[in-house]
Length: 54
Image (cartoon, rainbow, N blue to C red; front, side):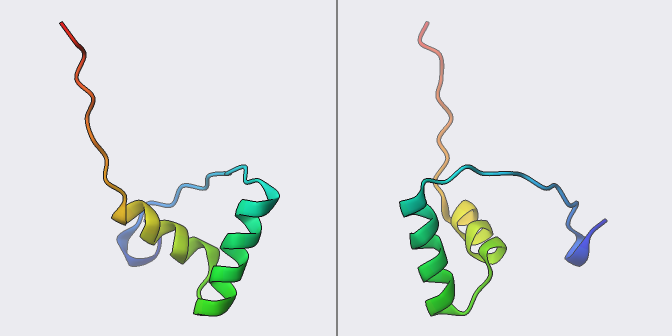
């Protein structure tokens, strides 16, 4: 297991230049790393299960 009991999985995300600049600016202003910001956004995301129409 990884740090804090996490099972580590590395992913790659393609961002536009504008998206990367926003992420970079936010990280610089908040003093946080990319990983921390992205993890927080995923935790805060609302995921809805889409049921198949019968």
